[in-house]
Amino acid sequence: MSQYPPPGNYPPSGDYPPPGGYGEQPYPQQPGGYPQQPGQQYWQEPQKGKGLAITALVLGVIALLSCWTVIGGVLFGVLAAIFGLVALLSKKAGGAGLAITGIVLGVIGLIIGIVIGLFTWSVFKDTGFDNYLDCVTAANGDQAKIEQCQRDFEQRVEDKFSVTVTPPPTP
Image (cartoon, rainbow, N blue to C red; front, side):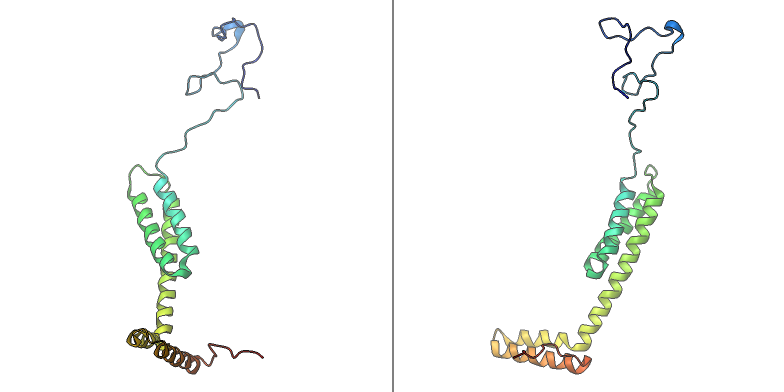
């Protein structure tokens, strides 16, 4: 539909005919004061107050997607939960469903991030990674001692998990 009024004999000033002319109703007015043609819809302002809930939802999705990085899951999970709770407790904020979804996704990402972090820490502790770090620190930059620390660590990993850390070179 055209944005211009329908053709007719209007005054040259562009004013619309007076209301009630020839049994016709005047065009309804839009909120901005512009006339609306029959059948034409006008743009409406979006509802206010859903910003915190949308932020919680986005952070919850990011927490769930980045939970394998541990820091991403924990950081974004906590932020999603905080923004979601603030959105739920705010009187003027809307979008309770978005806020709850953001909280749930954030908490799931947080839990998965913590579980992966604990598992990773446990594996490093079992393989003696902390001993390797102590050995490298005690080497004080001596390359031969650092290489010996690395060989000892690789041997502990091979013994513990029955895997070869460094495959032998192929001829």
